[in-house]
Length: 410
Image (cartoon, rainbow, N blue to C red; front, side, top):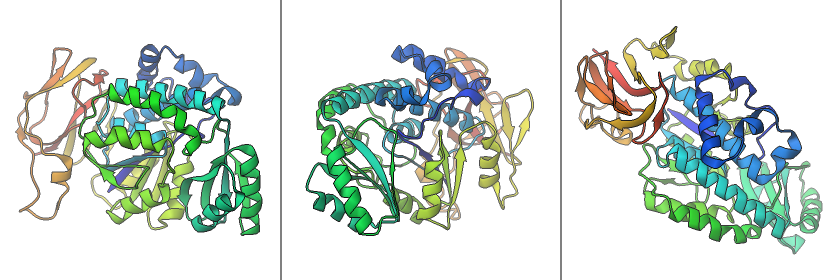
């Protein structure tokens, strides 16, 4: 049971894209630059820490970096049971789950970043991480500070993030230390996110959200606002709007996934903060940070530990093979149009994999059957077997060699 998690603003760092330049997934950076008019290559390779601290730069750079890594992981044939993202990462999670296309996601994030930048300039604020303090005591410190300061993130047991105005934060930090906080560390962001100080950003974000058609996610996405899985596409505009001024309930989110059976938490993006948090929230789980191409092998090892189905790479074919499983890859680049195949929803398949009565099987595919098209070019299966799932979403721009379907061969 695998979850994909995606970091938020604050995880960015200079040169975070350098190791991916020669990877096929880097194509997303060029595409994102064309869609937004932002030089994403510069942000991911050349921008310094001060430039990346600006909200509008930090958000689109972190989002794009995570999606490059997601694309690389999907090329391995790995897919999650749940997705979740911390703050900005929630948008990445929705793209990963198929509720948003890459084009929709990148435009939403660009709008969100700009709206939050303007709000931060209008009502300046900042954020601080407290270590060694309970959630209740952190809330009490904010209340006793009697000013514009709130708990913005419930990150893990013993770690919360406060956000607010500089003056109110200083008072809250002093009270928090009296209550037992061991450390108070500044976070490199440009505003008091997930607090009422972001209220002025909501109208612009709501307008951008109203222009997007959300689709049912292929796997559940856990929302920051309530730490619950949401599959109704109509609920997401309200959840994302509310998220601007509501605390991120990350500790509760990871706990929900763990109690649902998730054992491996793969953090896809720069940094590694969520991996450390996962280890503290659920010591029985396994956190894996994937930030560079070298980290892909760690993820493969984590997901195949104790399994007899160990993947290996077929050099030159852009394809990963398993003892009983195969990936069908696209022979050309272009927009993906799936064939009309009766593929069960992943949740129906996952209902009870050990019960023949309730485990819905996929359709049988023969050699040469058409799985879909990439801008009119047929994507045919070179294998015969059970079609487990489609890995690309309708309208997604495929690259040559990108996996589009997953089969269990006979």
